[in-house]
Image (cartoon, rainbow, N blue to C red; front, side):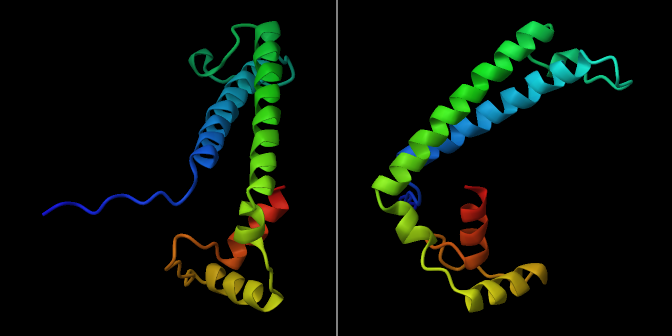
Length: 131
């Protein structure tokens, strides 16, 4: 018996943007920990093996370089999302009634997500608020 072929829910550009974001944010966290360690105000230090940059100046360079990668990636994501019509088709229309129902279901742990190709109202609002 052959397994069913996997169907991609998200386009390649979206998956790439999310992966770049994940790596970039992880790098920013690690360089931020090194910057935090350089401050004499705090008694707690993160382990050096988990930090990025080696010293304060190096950590700042990493942090700012990763910031630019994050900004460029966000610009690509927003441009492709708007130009492809993905944002319009996935996040709109919004409905207060649906939001109230979805939010109530989510808060009580009863939110069903039967169709993985469509966002529920809580997801739509969360994505819109993040941008």
